[in-house]
Length: 150
Image (tube, rainbow, N blue to C red; front, side):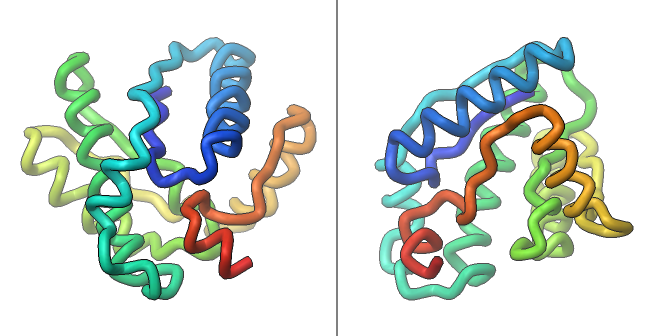
């Protein structure tokens, strides 16, 4: 599991999500890798887009940034495929995410596993599974702007 989320704000929220991801990876026996917290990079990349609505240009830049870093990790570590759990959210545009993933995969010579994990009751299942596992669930995507919208 690769954790790269420079969009999450404030840092306490980042740390909470990081520890939940680490705990879950350990529980299911998956190696865990954190890139590191660099909110300044995210703020620079999304500069001037604070008034964009959820799902707009700011989100596209955020997805591209995070998928790019994930692809770089995948290719550096010998993986053929990569994907993201972003499409589990009913607030996220799976078509946009999958399109970006495919383009980035091509750039790195990888394959992107396309999915809309919220389909067929996937979001409800994720809620149930996280409750079963006793995991913390946030109520906003992570960025300071989406937190303000909530």
